[in-house]
Length: 261
Ligand SMILES: [Zn+2]
Image: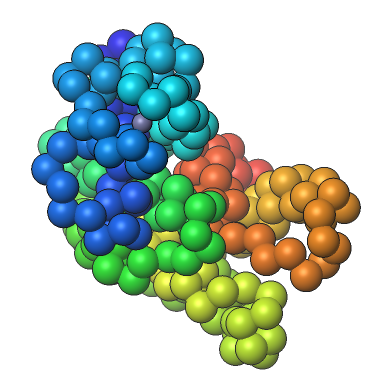
């Protein structure tokens, strides 16, 4: 678990950095301070530790680095540990077979991409399409393994439920986006929903993700709307979709038990 946390924190640091690089079209080889261009030494790049040691400030110019770095590192570290602990397979990951380990690895890679999207959307209210396509490619392989495994165990894969998931999540957001002319949700949100729906692969799980994302979104947005400029404030929805997805993915066994009765 400690190893998973360290791996998650390191990749979280990488992901947060990538969001900036993609946004600034920055090809620089080494991480540097956004303000004074100070090139970070290796000891400035240790996830979480460096941030805390420096008090969240640049070593040279003492300007604040920002919370996104620290939160990304801790966040992905925690989610990696949760993925290991709560992996929805019979007996958990410890007794998992090769296919399950493949799915788990793909899931972790997808988490890194989702974190770049999370940071990017929270910062600049945009979702880079190339990243969503990468996430989709991984999700298609993930789904492929799911289908392969269920046929291998002599079960039919529930194709109708998968189609239902695609209709209720990306379909719903696409409709909202089209009907509202991009004022309710952005054009990126429905594309982001595609990989999420493919991984969940189940109508009920997609439905719960929709609810969870909206509930989390409301909790965060209402104080923001009251405090700021009223209902016109654009709020990026991508982060809420990703958080809602994670909650539902980790609790999928419990949710499906609830629904199937
Ligand atoms: Zn600096």
